[in-house]
Image 1: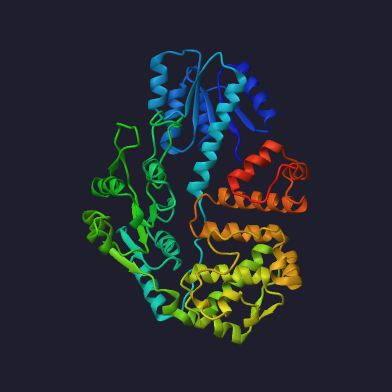
Image 2: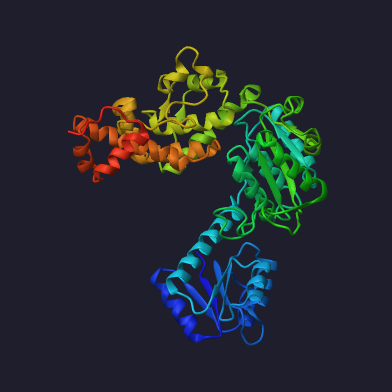
Length: 497
């Protein structure tokens, strides 16, 4: 993490902030004037900038203007002894994160800087994203057509609509289109519109002004601003709420938008790529999707084939995913026997490439030997009708972790050994989280957290024969806490004594 810059001509203010932030294990760098800070910005940037507003020479507002011109996502906190309305308005109009008047409470100042730090880290993680575009694998004729289309579009900024079933790799294609476009050196910002609650999606897309709604303590840039001069990828566009479709159409039509609660139009120089697994034409006929927006998005349509249409690529993908999974877990890659590869090639795999990747993760953790045969596959796949299973057990979207806490028992002693080599139940938890995140599932922390708490409490209750007070003692939590958790999680079989 980068240091926090403090710019103030008052040495005592610099000293107090330096010491307070050092106690929080936060690195700092101080400047006595704005000119030195501006010069330093040519070679480095801070995580957060704290500046006095009135100093000899260039003012804090001049510094704020310089920062926002080159680093719009960098939070700037303005500090001043002149707590008049004009200074506050000027600071916020210039894009300041917050305004703090001298004399200030040092604890409140540190709390404010921490909030700015969280915002800065959020911006950094969103804008940087994956630096390397994952490789798109495929030798089948259907995939070669996709590669040719990416090549034809390489020097274009045209809007592209990517269609195909879930799990076919639509985001990978969007990233490839960006990587080979004139905007390749600019941000690639991805947003799954189906994973964001409706009441938050507008703010996520267009940003919001401070005070626009309850909880909007600071001004926040939306995805359009974060993707400026780059590419914005909107996945599952077919699920976008109808009223937001109107706002998106306006941006695509005239290149301008407003933050939530804002009155100043913002200009967007962004290439928009969208994707959906739904039939947009049918959604237009059903009145669920605007026809004018559909035509705006459907300039170039790129359809991704399902895995059933490119079965010859399955062995190539399996070998790739097994090596990738083994590298992540620090174990030796498993090998598939010829009958096992033939078996996988014959499956329908409705979850497509994502399902195949999840299956390879499962094999890496659960298969007992280094060479994997058909009998080592998940039962749901090998049993009759298993080819219709969307995801392998314990690795699917929203799949629960084993309630008894002994994940290795799922596959007997061999499964336990495989789990031990892969990091035990922690390794399985990591794979489960990775699977859910890759599937675009929201609230992963809450889902897995509830499953984890439920497993612990159920196990403790079983150990204490249902006595919840004893279970609370064994778990190291309070009686009121376990009572509340039992009610929240819907756990049966508990008793007071």
